[in-house]
Image 1 (cartoon, one colour):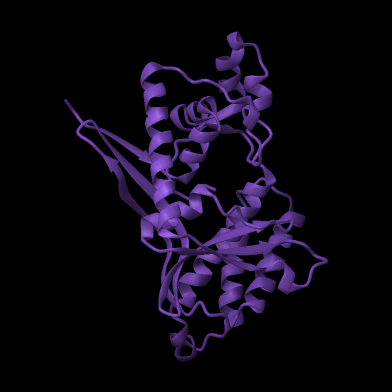
Image 2 (cartoon, rainbow, N blue to C red; image 1 turned 180 degrees about the vertical axis):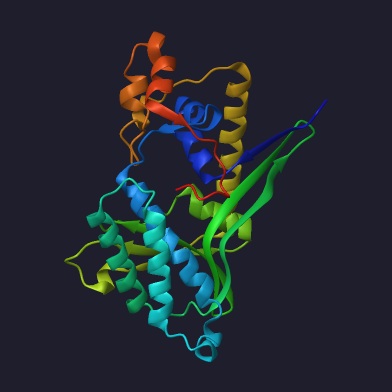
Length: 284
């Protein structure tokens, strides 16, 4: 008997826990809306600038010998962002808002404690569970990993138009800690608000988890994954309509789930495009 290998990341796990039918549409059938929501596009643009910024900042001691200033680095990252934005479905005002926020953010945190940068956009995987029949691989992609006071700390960038404290019980955050065998994560909030001062727009939240909380997350993750694998093998995908309006809003609610069951497959092909999921790809 061939052992089944199942690869799961935090977004797949979120979907398994929220609604099995959503999981089927998004990850098994590989469907996504023809147009991504604005917040995905803005987040993608911000990441497109933060990624090179921290990759270059890793070598900050060499800037002076190469006759580069901090502003030179920031401007190079803005140029990369503007090039990236040519393929986004947002207007020029939204692009300029993201660029302005990035420049203000890098100015505000120019001399922060992110000096010992270990990796940027690190992709990895780890065995979450294994028995003779199945191996569950947990995959992750961490925006930034640094050492702060000699403690390895994963960092997740979150950009938004409104202030929002991070979800302490997020699968993403606890999954990072389990994967990297650490007990804390820093959530790097980047706000787009024009009226707030930088100290209120660019907050950094430190979340700390005990070993028991991380162990509990792993046990519950295994349960939900095994439960979903069992449903997939049976070809059963029950909907959980209590999740329809939770943020982010389910893209299948209006066009698919609200339609007559006989036309859902037709509408899925009509209103959604094919997109295979790869956590290592630039998908936000």
